[in-house]
Image (cartoon, rainbow over all chains, first blue to last red; front, side, top):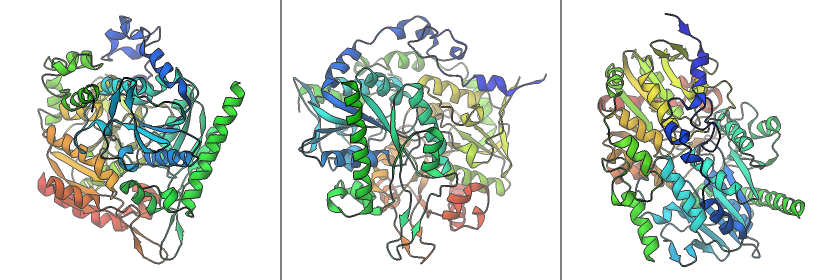
Length: 323
Length: 305
Protein backbone atom coordinates (compact mmCIF):
# COMPACT_ATOMS: atom_id res chain seq x y z
CA UNK A 1 0.00 0.00 0.00
CA UNK A 2 2.89 2.31 -0.43
CA UNK A 3 3.54 4.94 -3.00
CA UNK A 4 6.12 3.92 -5.55
CA UNK A 5 8.63 6.55 -6.32
CA UNK A 6 8.60 8.81 -9.29
CA UNK A 7 11.18 6.56 -10.94
CA UNK A 8 8.52 4.32 -12.42
CA UNK A 9 6.64 7.23 -13.96
CA UNK A 10 9.82 8.72 -15.38
CA UNK A 11 10.73 5.35 -16.83
CA UNK A 12 7.62 5.58 -18.97
CA UNK A 13 9.19 8.48 -20.81
CA UNK A 14 12.30 6.54 -21.76
CA UNK A 15 13.15 6.84 -25.37
CA UNK A 16 11.89 4.63 -28.10
CA UNK A 17 14.94 2.58 -29.14
CA UNK A 18 14.09 3.23 -32.77
CA UNK A 19 12.31 0.99 -35.22
CA UNK A 20 15.60 0.01 -36.83
CA UNK A 21 17.39 -0.87 -33.62
CA UNK A 22 18.12 -4.42 -32.49
CA UNK A 23 16.06 -3.71 -29.40
CA UNK A 24 13.03 -2.61 -31.40
CA UNK A 25 9.96 -4.06 -29.73
CA UNK A 26 12.02 -5.74 -27.03
CA UNK A 27 13.30 -2.92 -24.84
CA UNK A 28 11.68 -1.99 -21.51
CA UNK A 29 10.40 1.21 -23.02
CA UNK A 30 8.48 -0.79 -25.65
CA UNK A 31 6.02 -2.27 -23.17
CA UNK A 32 2.63 -0.80 -23.85
CA UNK A 33 3.59 0.87 -27.11
CA UNK A 34 0.99 0.20 -29.81
CA UNK A 35 3.74 -0.50 -32.32
CA UNK A 36 5.47 -3.10 -30.15
CA UNK A 37 4.38 -6.15 -32.10
CA UNK A 38 5.27 -4.63 -35.45
CA UNK A 39 8.75 -3.76 -34.22
CA UNK A 40 9.34 -7.09 -32.50
CA UNK A 41 8.48 -8.96 -35.68
CA UNK A 42 11.27 -7.12 -37.46
CA UNK A 43 8.93 -5.72 -40.07
CA UNK A 44 9.76 -2.14 -39.21
CA UNK A 45 13.49 -2.69 -39.50
CA UNK A 46 13.61 -3.64 -43.15
CA UNK A 47 15.65 -1.11 -45.14
CA UNK A 48 13.43 1.37 -46.92
CA UNK A 49 13.92 1.12 -50.70
CA UNK A 50 12.79 4.71 -51.06
CA UNK A 51 15.91 5.93 -49.27
CA UNK A 52 17.94 5.23 -52.39
CA UNK A 53 15.37 6.99 -54.57
CA UNK A 54 15.43 10.04 -52.30
CA UNK A 55 19.21 10.06 -52.32
CA UNK A 56 19.24 10.06 -56.09
CA UNK A 57 16.59 12.75 -56.35
CA UNK A 58 18.42 15.02 -53.92
CA UNK A 59 21.86 14.40 -55.39
CA UNK A 60 21.45 17.60 -57.42
CA UNK A 61 20.64 19.65 -54.31
CA UNK A 62 23.92 21.01 -53.03
CA UNK A 63 22.89 22.12 -49.52
CA UNK A 64 19.89 21.25 -47.37
CA UNK A 65 19.06 23.62 -44.53
CA UNK A 66 16.49 22.47 -41.97
CA UNK A 67 14.74 25.30 -40.11
CA UNK A 68 13.74 23.93 -36.72
CA UNK A 69 12.51 25.21 -33.42
CA UNK A 70 10.57 22.88 -31.20
CA UNK A 71 8.47 25.88 -30.15
CA UNK A 72 5.54 27.05 -32.22
CA UNK A 73 5.04 30.63 -33.32
CA UNK A 74 8.66 31.76 -33.16
CA UNK A 75 8.71 32.46 -36.89
CA UNK A 76 10.07 29.29 -38.50
CA UNK A 77 7.95 29.74 -41.62
CA UNK A 78 8.71 33.45 -41.78
CA UNK A 79 12.44 32.86 -41.30
CA UNK A 80 12.42 29.98 -43.84
CA UNK A 81 10.72 32.14 -46.45
CA UNK A 82 12.91 35.18 -45.75
CA UNK A 83 16.10 33.11 -45.86
CA UNK A 84 14.94 31.51 -49.08
CA UNK A 85 14.24 34.94 -50.56
CA UNK A 86 17.56 36.31 -49.26
CA UNK A 87 19.52 33.41 -50.75
CA UNK A 88 17.64 33.89 -54.04
CA UNK A 89 18.61 37.58 -54.24
CA UNK A 90 21.74 36.20 -55.90
CA UNK A 91 20.46 35.48 -59.42
CA UNK A 92 23.12 32.88 -60.00
CA UNK A 93 21.75 30.63 -57.24
CA UNK A 94 18.78 28.26 -57.46
CA UNK A 95 16.82 27.98 -54.22
CA UNK A 96 13.98 25.71 -53.12
CA UNK A 97 11.69 25.81 -50.07
CA UNK A 98 10.08 22.58 -48.88
CA UNK A 99 7.23 23.00 -46.38
CA UNK A 100 6.75 19.81 -44.36
CA UNK A 101 4.26 21.31 -41.92
CA UNK A 102 1.39 19.03 -42.92
CA UNK A 103 -1.18 20.36 -40.42
CA UNK A 104 -0.42 24.05 -40.74
CA UNK A 105 1.24 24.75 -44.11
CA UNK A 106 2.15 28.44 -44.31
CA UNK A 107 4.55 28.76 -47.23
CA UNK A 108 2.00 29.13 -50.06
CA UNK A 109 0.55 32.25 -48.41
CA UNK A 110 3.86 33.68 -47.18
CA UNK A 111 5.37 33.43 -50.64
CA UNK A 112 2.34 34.85 -52.42
CA UNK A 113 1.43 31.57 -54.11
CA UNK A 114 -1.73 30.61 -52.24
CA UNK A 115 -3.76 30.04 -55.42
CA UNK A 116 -1.18 27.91 -57.19
CA UNK A 117 -1.52 24.21 -57.90
CA UNK A 118 1.08 21.50 -58.38
CA UNK A 119 1.67 20.02 -61.83
CA UNK A 120 3.09 16.65 -62.57
CA UNK A 121 5.15 15.34 -65.48
CA UNK A 122 7.19 12.29 -66.33
CA UNK A 123 10.07 13.73 -64.31
CA UNK A 124 7.92 14.06 -61.16
CA UNK A 125 5.98 16.87 -59.50
CA UNK A 126 6.94 20.36 -60.47
CA UNK A 127 7.36 22.72 -57.56
CA UNK A 128 5.69 26.12 -57.76
CA UNK A 129 8.02 28.90 -58.88
CA UNK A 130 7.53 32.18 -57.03
CA UNK A 131 10.36 33.80 -58.94
CA UNK A 132 12.83 32.65 -61.57
CA UNK A 133 15.16 31.06 -59.10
CA UNK A 134 12.92 30.34 -56.09
CA UNK A 135 10.68 27.25 -56.04
CA UNK A 136 8.41 25.93 -53.29
CA UNK A 137 6.51 22.74 -52.45
CA UNK A 138 3.86 22.41 -49.73
CA UNK A 139 0.81 20.30 -49.00
CA UNK A 140 -1.02 23.60 -49.10
CA UNK A 141 -0.93 23.40 -52.90
CA UNK A 142 -2.65 20.03 -52.85
CA UNK A 143 -5.67 21.03 -50.80
CA UNK A 144 -8.80 22.04 -52.61
CA UNK A 145 -10.02 24.35 -49.92
CA UNK A 146 -7.91 26.81 -47.97
CA UNK A 147 -9.38 25.73 -44.66
CA UNK A 148 -9.64 21.98 -44.99
CA UNK A 149 -8.32 20.31 -41.86
CA UNK A 150 -5.58 17.78 -42.54
CA UNK A 151 -6.29 15.39 -39.71
CA UNK A 152 -3.60 12.82 -40.18
CA UNK A 153 -1.78 10.61 -37.75
CA UNK A 154 1.98 10.21 -37.80
CA UNK A 155 2.49 7.41 -40.37
CA UNK A 156 0.42 9.21 -42.99
CA UNK A 157 2.32 12.44 -42.46
CA UNK A 158 5.57 10.51 -42.84
CA UNK A 159 4.29 9.03 -46.09
CA UNK A 160 3.56 12.49 -47.47
CA UNK A 161 6.99 13.79 -46.54
CA UNK A 162 8.59 10.82 -48.23
CA UNK A 163 6.57 11.50 -51.36
CA UNK A 164 7.69 15.11 -51.38
CA UNK A 165 11.31 14.03 -51.18
CA UNK A 166 10.96 11.23 -53.68
CA UNK A 167 8.74 12.80 -56.32
CA UNK A 168 9.39 16.52 -56.45
CA UNK A 169 11.55 17.46 -59.43
CA UNK A 170 13.63 20.30 -58.01
CA UNK A 171 16.30 20.14 -60.67
CA UNK A 172 19.72 21.43 -59.65
CA UNK A 173 19.47 23.52 -56.49
CA UNK A 174 22.14 25.36 -54.57
CA UNK A 175 20.00 25.49 -51.41
CA UNK A 176 16.90 23.63 -50.22
CA UNK A 177 15.39 25.29 -47.16
CA UNK A 178 13.05 22.97 -45.25
CA UNK A 179 10.34 24.56 -43.10
CA UNK A 180 9.25 22.23 -40.27
CA UNK A 181 6.31 22.17 -37.86
CA UNK A 182 6.86 22.70 -34.13
CA UNK A 183 7.84 19.70 -31.99
CA UNK A 184 10.21 16.75 -32.11
CA UNK A 185 8.04 14.05 -33.57
CA UNK A 186 7.08 12.14 -36.68
CA UNK A 187 7.82 14.85 -39.21
CA UNK A 188 11.22 15.63 -37.71
CA UNK A 189 12.29 12.01 -37.41
CA UNK A 190 11.12 11.40 -40.93
CA UNK A 191 12.88 14.34 -42.57
CA UNK A 192 16.09 13.66 -40.68
CA UNK A 193 16.03 10.01 -41.67
CA UNK A 194 15.65 10.80 -45.36
CA UNK A 195 17.94 13.80 -45.55
CA UNK A 196 20.68 11.98 -43.66
CA UNK A 197 20.74 9.59 -46.61
CA UNK A 198 21.53 12.55 -48.88
CA UNK A 199 24.03 14.79 -47.13
CA UNK A 200 25.06 17.54 -46.64
CA UNK A 201 22.32 18.70 -44.32
CA UNK A 202 22.46 21.16 -41.43
CA UNK A 203 20.01 22.96 -39.18
CA UNK A 204 19.15 26.52 -38.30
CA UNK A 205 17.31 26.72 -34.98
CA UNK A 206 14.88 29.59 -34.37
CA UNK A 207 13.84 30.91 -30.98
CA UNK A 208 12.25 33.93 -29.37
CA UNK A 209 13.81 35.45 -26.26
CA UNK A 210 11.47 34.25 -23.52
CA UNK A 211 12.14 31.25 -21.30
CA UNK A 212 8.95 29.41 -22.25
CA UNK A 213 10.33 29.29 -25.83
CA UNK A 214 13.86 28.41 -24.77
CA UNK A 215 12.48 25.41 -22.87
CA UNK A 216 11.37 23.82 -26.13
CA UNK A 217 14.34 25.01 -28.16
CA UNK A 218 16.80 23.36 -25.78
CA UNK A 219 15.00 20.09 -26.50
CA UNK A 220 15.29 20.71 -30.22
CA UNK A 221 19.05 21.26 -29.91
CA UNK A 222 19.27 18.00 -27.95
CA UNK A 223 17.29 16.33 -30.73
CA UNK A 224 19.70 17.60 -33.43
CA UNK A 225 22.69 16.31 -31.52
CA UNK A 226 21.02 12.98 -30.94
CA UNK A 227 20.32 12.45 -34.66
CA UNK A 228 23.71 13.89 -35.72
CA UNK A 229 22.44 16.90 -37.60
CA UNK A 230 25.04 19.70 -37.42
CA UNK A 231 23.65 23.04 -36.28
CA UNK A 232 24.73 26.05 -38.34
CA UNK A 233 23.48 28.36 -35.63
CA UNK A 234 20.66 29.92 -33.63
CA UNK A 235 18.46 32.78 -34.77
CA UNK A 236 16.65 34.84 -32.14
CA UNK A 237 13.46 36.32 -33.59
CA UNK A 238 11.19 39.08 -32.22
CA UNK A 239 14.01 40.41 -30.09
CA UNK A 240 12.76 43.99 -29.74
CA UNK A 241 9.81 46.02 -30.98
CA UNK A 242 10.34 49.60 -32.11
CA UNK A 243 7.38 51.86 -31.35
CA UNK A 244 6.46 53.54 -34.65
CA UNK A 245 5.63 56.77 -32.81
CA UNK A 246 8.41 57.40 -30.32
CA UNK A 247 10.95 54.88 -31.59
CA UNK A 248 11.48 53.40 -28.13
CA UNK A 249 12.73 49.85 -28.28
CA UNK A 250 10.85 47.42 -26.07
CA UNK A 251 11.54 43.75 -25.51
CA UNK A 252 7.98 42.47 -25.79
CA UNK A 253 9.09 38.91 -25.04
CA UNK A 254 11.62 39.60 -22.31
CA UNK A 255 14.75 37.52 -22.10
CA UNK A 256 14.43 36.82 -18.40
CA UNK A 257 16.97 34.00 -18.65
CA UNK A 258 19.30 35.57 -21.19
CA UNK A 259 17.37 34.77 -24.35
CA UNK A 260 19.00 33.49 -27.51
CA UNK A 261 22.52 34.73 -26.71
CA UNK A 262 22.61 32.91 -23.38
CA UNK A 263 21.19 29.75 -24.94
CA UNK A 264 23.79 29.93 -27.68
CA UNK A 265 26.55 30.20 -25.13
CA UNK A 266 25.14 27.44 -22.91
CA UNK A 267 24.81 24.99 -25.79
CA UNK A 268 27.90 25.97 -27.78
CA UNK A 269 25.83 26.91 -30.83
CA UNK A 270 26.78 30.05 -32.83
CA UNK A 271 24.31 32.95 -32.63
CA UNK A 272 23.61 33.78 -36.28
CA UNK A 273 21.59 36.89 -35.59
CA UNK A 274 18.82 38.67 -33.72
CA UNK A 275 15.79 39.80 -35.71
CA UNK A 276 13.67 42.73 -34.56
CA UNK A 277 9.88 42.47 -34.39
CA UNK A 278 8.79 44.59 -37.32
CA UNK A 279 5.04 44.56 -38.08
CA UNK A 280 5.85 45.08 -41.75
CA UNK A 281 7.28 41.54 -41.85
CA UNK A 282 4.03 40.05 -40.53
CA UNK A 283 2.08 42.14 -43.02
CA UNK A 284 4.31 41.08 -45.93
CA UNK A 285 3.86 37.43 -44.96
CA UNK A 286 0.09 37.87 -44.83
CA UNK A 287 0.11 39.50 -48.26
CA UNK A 288 2.74 37.26 -49.81
CA UNK A 289 5.07 40.11 -50.75
CA UNK A 290 8.84 40.34 -50.46
CA UNK A 291 9.85 42.75 -47.70
CA UNK A 292 13.52 42.40 -48.64
CA UNK A 293 12.88 44.25 -51.90
CA UNK A 294 10.05 46.45 -50.62
CA UNK A 295 11.94 47.80 -47.62
CA UNK A 296 15.61 47.41 -48.51
CA UNK A 297 16.73 49.84 -45.80
CA UNK A 298 14.82 48.26 -42.93
CA UNK A 299 16.91 46.90 -40.07
CA UNK A 300 15.17 43.55 -40.39
CA UNK A 301 16.09 43.31 -44.09
CA UNK A 302 19.77 43.77 -43.31
CA UNK A 303 19.53 41.29 -40.46
CA UNK A 304 18.08 38.61 -42.76
CA UNK A 305 20.76 39.26 -45.38
CA UNK A 306 23.49 38.92 -42.75
CA UNK A 307 22.09 35.60 -41.55
CA UNK A 308 21.79 34.34 -45.13
CA UNK A 309 25.44 35.28 -45.73
CA UNK A 310 26.55 33.35 -42.68
CA UNK A 311 24.64 30.31 -43.93
CA UNK A 312 26.29 30.66 -47.33
CA UNK A 313 29.72 30.87 -45.71
CA UNK A 314 28.99 27.77 -43.63
CA UNK A 315 27.88 25.80 -46.69
CA UNK A 316 30.90 26.88 -48.71
CA UNK A 317 33.25 25.94 -45.90
CA UNK A 318 31.61 22.51 -45.58
CA UNK A 319 31.86 21.80 -49.29
CA UNK A 320 35.51 22.83 -49.34
CA UNK A 321 36.23 20.49 -46.45
CA UNK A 322 34.51 17.68 -48.28
CA UNK A 323 36.66 18.06 -51.43
CA UNK B 1 -3.28 19.11 -64.15
CA UNK B 2 -2.00 15.60 -64.71
CA UNK B 3 -3.75 12.45 -63.55
CA UNK B 4 -1.10 11.76 -60.89
CA UNK B 5 -1.47 15.15 -59.23
CA UNK B 6 -5.26 14.95 -59.36
CA UNK B 7 -5.17 11.50 -57.72
CA UNK B 8 -3.00 12.92 -54.98
CA UNK B 9 -5.49 15.72 -54.34
CA UNK B 10 -8.27 13.14 -54.00
CA UNK B 11 -6.18 11.13 -51.55
CA UNK B 12 -5.52 14.18 -49.42
CA UNK B 13 -9.20 15.07 -49.40
CA UNK B 14 -10.67 11.68 -48.60
CA UNK B 15 -8.51 10.22 -45.81
CA UNK B 16 -11.09 8.58 -43.54
CA UNK B 17 -8.77 8.26 -40.53
CA UNK B 18 -11.41 9.25 -38.04
CA UNK B 19 -14.28 7.18 -39.39
CA UNK B 20 -15.30 3.52 -39.40
CA UNK B 21 -13.79 3.18 -42.83
CA UNK B 22 -10.28 3.88 -41.59
CA UNK B 23 -7.96 1.40 -43.28
CA UNK B 24 -10.76 -0.17 -45.34
CA UNK B 25 -11.63 2.47 -47.90
CA UNK B 26 -10.35 2.31 -51.46
CA UNK B 27 -8.21 5.36 -50.88
CA UNK B 28 -6.38 3.52 -48.05
CA UNK B 29 -4.61 1.12 -50.40
CA UNK B 30 -0.94 1.98 -50.42
CA UNK B 31 -1.22 4.43 -47.54
CA UNK B 32 1.55 4.01 -44.96
CA UNK B 33 -0.93 4.58 -42.14
CA UNK B 34 -3.23 1.76 -43.23
CA UNK B 35 -2.03 -0.89 -40.76
CA UNK B 36 -2.23 1.51 -37.87
CA UNK B 37 -5.75 2.57 -38.78
CA UNK B 38 -6.84 -1.06 -39.11
CA UNK B 39 -5.40 -1.95 -35.71
CA UNK B 40 -6.82 1.08 -33.92
CA UNK B 41 -10.10 1.63 -35.63
CA UNK B 42 -12.24 -1.47 -35.64
CA UNK B 43 -12.65 -2.90 -32.15
CA UNK B 44 -14.37 -1.19 -29.25
CA UNK B 45 -11.85 0.04 -26.71
CA UNK B 46 -11.75 -2.33 -23.71
CA UNK B 47 -10.46 0.44 -21.49
CA UNK B 48 -13.21 2.85 -22.42
CA UNK B 49 -15.17 2.06 -19.26
CA UNK B 50 -12.25 3.01 -17.03
CA UNK B 51 -11.76 6.17 -19.05
CA UNK B 52 -15.46 7.02 -18.84
CA UNK B 53 -15.45 6.51 -15.07
CA UNK B 54 -12.54 8.89 -14.65
CA UNK B 55 -14.09 11.46 -16.95
CA UNK B 56 -17.54 11.01 -15.42
CA UNK B 57 -16.24 12.60 -12.23
CA UNK B 58 -15.27 15.73 -14.15
CA UNK B 59 -18.12 18.11 -14.87
CA UNK B 60 -16.72 20.30 -17.65
CA UNK B 61 -13.89 19.54 -20.06
CA UNK B 62 -12.61 22.54 -21.96
CA UNK B 63 -10.07 22.09 -24.76
CA UNK B 64 -7.74 24.99 -25.57
CA UNK B 65 -6.93 24.65 -29.26
CA UNK B 66 -5.36 26.65 -32.01
CA UNK B 67 -3.66 24.70 -34.74
CA UNK B 68 -1.15 27.53 -34.84
CA UNK B 69 1.89 27.51 -32.60
CA UNK B 70 2.96 30.33 -30.34
CA UNK B 71 -0.37 32.14 -30.03
CA UNK B 72 -0.56 31.69 -26.28
CA UNK B 73 -2.55 28.47 -25.79
CA UNK B 74 -0.62 27.38 -22.70
CA UNK B 75 -0.65 30.83 -21.16
CA UNK B 76 -4.37 31.17 -21.77
CA UNK B 77 -5.02 27.65 -20.41
CA UNK B 78 -3.23 28.62 -17.20
CA UNK B 79 -5.09 31.95 -16.90
CA UNK B 80 -8.40 30.19 -17.47
CA UNK B 81 -7.58 27.58 -14.84
CA UNK B 82 -6.45 30.21 -12.33
CA UNK B 83 -9.55 32.36 -12.73
CA UNK B 84 -11.88 29.38 -12.34
CA UNK B 85 -9.92 28.15 -9.31
CA UNK B 86 -10.04 31.65 -7.86
CA UNK B 87 -13.83 31.46 -8.03
CA UNK B 88 -13.80 28.34 -5.89
CA UNK B 89 -13.96 25.66 -8.58
CA UNK B 90 -12.02 22.38 -8.35
CA UNK B 91 -9.83 22.68 -11.42
CA UNK B 92 -7.47 20.37 -13.30
CA UNK B 93 -5.08 21.31 -16.11
CA UNK B 94 -3.96 18.54 -18.45
CA UNK B 95 -1.08 19.28 -20.81
CA UNK B 96 -1.15 16.94 -23.82
CA UNK B 97 1.70 18.71 -25.61
CA UNK B 98 4.15 15.83 -25.44
CA UNK B 99 7.00 17.46 -27.39
CA UNK B 100 6.82 20.96 -25.95
CA UNK B 101 5.21 20.86 -22.49
CA UNK B 102 4.99 24.41 -21.15
CA UNK B 103 2.52 24.01 -18.28
CA UNK B 104 4.96 23.00 -15.48
CA UNK B 105 7.01 26.14 -16.13
CA UNK B 106 3.97 28.42 -16.27
CA UNK B 107 2.46 26.95 -13.10
CA UNK B 108 5.74 26.99 -11.22
CA UNK B 109 5.85 23.23 -10.63
CA UNK B 110 8.93 22.39 -12.69
CA UNK B 111 10.71 20.68 -9.85
CA UNK B 112 7.76 18.68 -8.60
CA UNK B 113 7.65 15.05 -9.68
CA UNK B 114 4.53 13.06 -10.46
CA UNK B 115 4.00 10.41 -7.82
CA UNK B 116 2.99 6.95 -8.87
CA UNK B 117 0.76 4.89 -6.61
CA UNK B 118 -1.02 1.59 -7.00
CA UNK B 119 -4.19 3.49 -7.93
CA UNK B 120 -2.49 5.58 -10.57
CA UNK B 121 -0.55 8.78 -11.13
CA UNK B 122 -1.10 11.59 -8.66
CA UNK B 123 -1.26 14.89 -10.51
CA UNK B 124 0.99 17.63 -9.19
CA UNK B 125 -0.86 20.38 -7.31
CA UNK B 126 0.16 23.88 -8.28
CA UNK B 127 0.37 26.36 -5.41
CA UNK B 128 -1.12 28.96 -7.77
CA UNK B 129 -4.76 28.17 -7.13
CA UNK B 130 -4.51 24.55 -5.99
CA UNK B 131 -4.83 23.39 -9.57
CA UNK B 132 -4.20 19.67 -10.21
CA UNK B 133 -1.96 19.37 -13.22
CA UNK B 134 -0.28 16.68 -15.30
CA UNK B 135 2.22 17.15 -18.08
CA UNK B 136 4.94 15.10 -19.68
CA UNK B 137 7.20 17.93 -18.51
CA UNK B 138 6.73 16.66 -14.94
CA UNK B 139 7.79 13.19 -16.02
CA UNK B 140 11.15 14.21 -17.48
CA UNK B 141 14.37 13.90 -15.54
CA UNK B 142 15.81 16.99 -17.20
CA UNK B 143 14.15 19.94 -18.92
CA UNK B 144 16.49 19.73 -21.89
CA UNK B 145 15.57 16.08 -22.45
CA UNK B 146 13.89 15.81 -25.82
CA UNK B 147 10.79 13.63 -26.11
CA UNK B 148 11.26 12.32 -29.60
CA UNK B 149 8.24 10.12 -30.04
CA UNK B 150 6.20 9.07 -32.98
CA UNK B 151 2.43 9.27 -33.02
CA UNK B 152 1.47 5.90 -31.50
CA UNK B 153 3.59 6.42 -28.42
CA UNK B 154 2.26 9.93 -27.87
CA UNK B 155 -1.25 8.49 -28.18
CA UNK B 156 -0.49 5.80 -25.58
CA UNK B 157 0.82 8.37 -23.11
CA UNK B 158 -2.17 10.65 -23.50
CA UNK B 159 -4.48 7.70 -22.82
CA UNK B 160 -2.57 7.01 -19.61
CA UNK B 161 -2.85 10.65 -18.62
CA UNK B 162 -6.61 10.21 -18.55
CA UNK B 163 -7.04 6.54 -17.69
CA UNK B 164 -4.33 6.11 -15.06
CA UNK B 165 -4.44 9.50 -13.37
CA UNK B 166 -6.18 10.25 -10.09
CA UNK B 167 -7.98 13.42 -11.14
CA UNK B 168 -10.75 12.83 -8.64
CA UNK B 169 -13.86 15.00 -8.71
CA UNK B 170 -13.33 18.20 -10.64
CA UNK B 171 -15.60 21.00 -11.74
CA UNK B 172 -13.49 21.82 -14.80
CA UNK B 173 -10.61 20.10 -16.59
CA UNK B 174 -8.77 22.47 -18.92
CA UNK B 175 -6.78 20.66 -21.63
CA UNK B 176 -3.80 22.43 -23.20
CA UNK B 177 -2.93 21.07 -26.64
CA UNK B 178 0.04 21.32 -29.02
CA UNK B 179 -0.22 23.05 -32.39
CA UNK B 180 -1.59 21.02 -35.31
CA UNK B 181 -4.47 18.66 -36.03
CA UNK B 182 -2.86 15.29 -35.51
CA UNK B 183 -2.37 12.37 -33.14
CA UNK B 184 -2.71 14.32 -29.90
CA UNK B 185 -5.89 16.07 -31.03
CA UNK B 186 -7.53 12.96 -32.44
CA UNK B 187 -6.62 11.03 -29.30
CA UNK B 188 -7.98 13.51 -26.79
CA UNK B 189 -11.19 14.06 -28.76
CA UNK B 190 -11.72 10.29 -29.09
CA UNK B 191 -11.10 9.79 -25.37
CA UNK B 192 -13.71 12.43 -24.58
CA UNK B 193 -16.17 11.14 -27.18
CA UNK B 194 -18.50 9.18 -24.89
CA UNK B 195 -18.46 11.68 -22.04
CA UNK B 196 -18.50 14.66 -24.42
CA UNK B 197 -16.14 17.60 -24.22
CA UNK B 198 -17.95 20.73 -23.11
CA UNK B 199 -16.27 22.56 -25.90
CA UNK B 200 -13.18 24.18 -27.31
CA UNK B 201 -11.75 27.65 -26.90
CA UNK B 202 -9.84 28.57 -30.05
CA UNK B 203 -6.82 30.86 -29.83
CA UNK B 204 -5.48 32.93 -32.67
CA UNK B 205 -3.07 35.81 -33.10
CA UNK B 206 -4.26 38.74 -35.24
CA UNK B 207 -2.22 37.74 -38.30
CA UNK B 208 -4.08 36.44 -41.35
CA UNK B 209 -1.37 33.81 -41.69
CA UNK B 210 -2.47 32.48 -38.30
CA UNK B 211 -6.12 32.63 -39.39
CA UNK B 212 -5.29 30.33 -42.28
CA UNK B 213 -4.01 27.66 -39.91
CA UNK B 214 -6.61 28.25 -37.18
CA UNK B 215 -9.46 27.90 -39.66
CA UNK B 216 -8.36 24.30 -40.14
CA UNK B 217 -8.64 23.76 -36.42
CA UNK B 218 -12.18 25.15 -36.42
CA UNK B 219 -13.01 22.77 -39.24
CA UNK B 220 -11.46 19.94 -37.21
CA UNK B 221 -13.81 20.77 -34.33
CA UNK B 222 -16.80 20.86 -36.67
CA UNK B 223 -15.81 17.52 -38.17
CA UNK B 224 -15.29 15.89 -34.77
CA UNK B 225 -18.47 17.41 -33.21
CA UNK B 226 -16.63 19.44 -30.62
CA UNK B 227 -18.65 22.58 -29.82
CA UNK B 228 -16.65 25.78 -30.36
CA UNK B 229 -17.23 27.97 -27.30
CA UNK B 230 -15.56 30.93 -28.99
CA UNK B 231 -12.43 32.54 -30.38
CA UNK B 232 -9.86 34.54 -28.44
CA UNK B 233 -7.57 36.87 -30.38
CA UNK B 234 -4.33 37.04 -28.40
CA UNK B 235 -1.39 39.47 -28.76
CA UNK B 236 -3.88 41.98 -30.08
CA UNK B 237 -2.08 45.28 -29.89
CA UNK B 238 0.80 46.55 -27.79
CA UNK B 239 0.78 49.64 -25.62
CA UNK B 240 4.17 51.37 -25.70
CA UNK B 241 5.33 51.85 -22.11
CA UNK B 242 6.94 55.14 -23.09
CA UNK B 243 4.30 57.06 -25.06
CA UNK B 244 1.22 54.81 -24.61
CA UNK B 245 0.70 54.57 -28.33
CA UNK B 246 -1.13 51.34 -29.12
CA UNK B 247 0.48 49.61 -32.08
CA UNK B 248 -0.55 46.57 -34.03
CA UNK B 249 2.48 44.35 -33.69
CA UNK B 250 0.80 41.60 -35.72
CA UNK B 251 -1.67 43.37 -37.99
CA UNK B 252 -4.57 41.47 -39.54
CA UNK B 253 -7.74 41.29 -37.42
CA UNK B 254 -7.93 37.51 -37.71
CA UNK B 255 -10.14 37.00 -34.63
CA UNK B 256 -13.11 38.95 -35.96
CA UNK B 257 -12.58 37.53 -39.45
CA UNK B 258 -12.72 33.92 -38.20
CA UNK B 259 -15.68 34.61 -35.90
CA UNK B 260 -17.67 36.00 -38.77
CA UNK B 261 -16.65 33.36 -41.30
CA UNK B 262 -17.47 30.38 -39.11
CA UNK B 263 -20.29 32.04 -37.11
CA UNK B 264 -18.70 31.42 -33.75
CA UNK B 265 -18.55 33.97 -30.92
CA UNK B 266 -15.54 36.24 -30.58
CA UNK B 267 -14.89 35.99 -26.85
CA UNK B 268 -12.50 38.90 -26.87
CA UNK B 269 -9.10 40.33 -27.75
CA UNK B 270 -6.18 40.20 -25.33
CA UNK B 271 -3.36 42.72 -25.68
CA UNK B 272 0.34 41.96 -25.41
CA UNK B 273 1.28 42.62 -21.82
CA UNK B 274 4.88 43.11 -20.78
CA UNK B 275 4.07 42.41 -17.17
CA UNK B 276 2.60 39.04 -18.03
CA UNK B 277 5.44 38.10 -20.33
CA UNK B 278 8.09 39.18 -17.84
CA UNK B 279 6.67 37.85 -14.61
CA UNK B 280 4.96 34.86 -16.07
CA UNK B 281 1.54 33.91 -14.85
CA UNK B 282 2.82 33.28 -11.37
CA UNK B 283 2.69 36.73 -9.90
CA UNK B 284 1.31 40.16 -10.48
CA UNK B 285 -0.76 39.36 -13.53
CA UNK B 286 -4.02 39.91 -11.72
CA UNK B 287 -3.48 43.69 -11.89
CA UNK B 288 -2.45 43.71 -15.53
CA UNK B 289 -4.53 44.96 -18.51
CA UNK B 290 -4.80 41.35 -19.59
CA UNK B 291 -6.52 40.26 -16.40
CA UNK B 292 -9.79 42.09 -16.90
CA UNK B 293 -9.97 41.05 -20.55
CA UNK B 294 -9.52 37.41 -19.56
CA UNK B 295 -12.01 37.63 -16.68
CA UNK B 296 -14.66 38.93 -19.07
CA UNK B 297 -13.94 36.07 -21.44
CA UNK B 298 -14.13 33.47 -18.68
CA UNK B 299 -17.55 34.83 -17.71
CA UNK B 300 -18.72 34.33 -21.30
CA UNK B 301 -17.25 30.81 -21.41
CA UNK B 302 -19.01 29.88 -18.16
CA UNK B 303 -22.34 30.99 -19.62
CA UNK B 304 -21.90 28.50 -22.42
CA UNK B 305 -20.84 25.55 -20.24
